[in-house]
Structures are given as C-alpha cells and as structure tokens.
Image 1: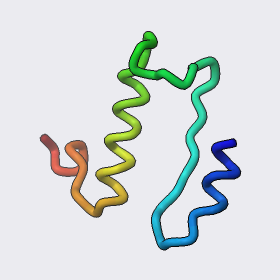
Image 2: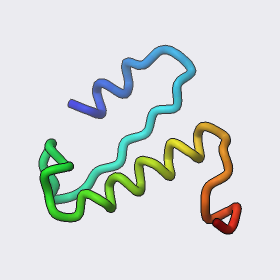
Image 3: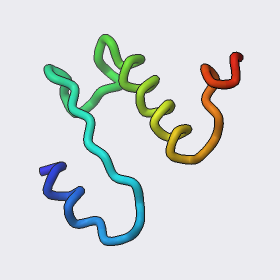
Length: 58
C-alpha cells in the first residue's frame, strides 16, 4: 500500500520508501525503534540541505 501511495504524489516532494523487515506499523513501541528514528532524522536533514552532525564534526 505504501508503494502505491508514493506513486501518487504529484508535487516535487522527495519521496522514498525504507522498509524494516520484521517491524510493525507502530514503530515507537518496539525494541530497536531508535534505529528507525536515527535514519528518519538523518534522511530529513540530508533532504533539507542542512549539514549533518557527522559532516560538521559535532
């Protein structure tokens, strides 16, 4: 369903799909949710054009 939704975006938004095998929809309630949150934050920073913490050395 998510792949179908992504195909319907018509604006110039950046849309990508990242799947986490074995994870349910309610990610914050699961063990390992930090990995998903870290990925989402890094992705958002990258696509916002801001320097990441790793790139800036902080």
